[in-house]
Length: 294
Image 1: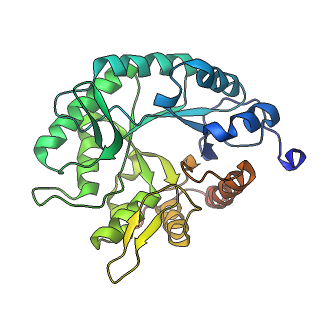
Image 2: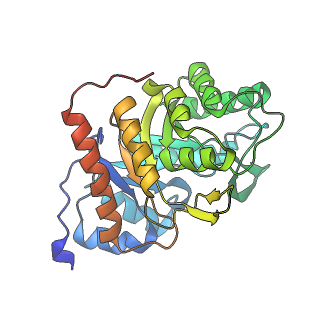
């Protein structure tokens, strides 16, 4: 089985238009022993702060570009970033030198207690000021641009004042941060709230998008008003591939992650999905410069 997986090449350059996969614990051994071909690897920061996992990641970073994706910085908290946790993340970034560094538009911490979820908050000018302050602090500490990922949401707040795409655009304007466009999250949120996924995509500031994410979702209720849940436990759905195609045509090629966080499949299956993304990236890259469609 292993002999059928192409080998990686030692190349740590930024993966400008390559498809990568999320590095997850069940695949550590295969990556260490086989070095399968992958455009790049994303790691969840909080899982690699110390110990054997960090040693594994350092070994793999010799052969793969790596991207650092945090899940615990809690950019939406109003009382400021946890400075101790930020210092740990900065130390990890200095050690691994990832070509991208990112976080979520969410909150998940109270004082020094971290919650096991990425929670939403109202999109108001008050929370925007909090998030902008936190992004500024993180970027100052890292000494580089941070990418902020759009969330998958299941509720909306009556007190919200800004559409999400406008909120992210204003965050970019205030802080100079970049964005991850999680295409599955765009589709999930638009479906759950009766929105227009294509209009949302076109409303994002294209120049700020530094990465795409692709993942699977579950249809928890397939009635007249379906509820989609961003589960990351299955292949990318057909309408998400379609929306990704639109993103490539209107925004252009960017590093693209295929992620799976539950029901993790054999590595060959995950890499095959990355190949599907790479075929699309190559086709769009070969077509030349991209014009944003109004």
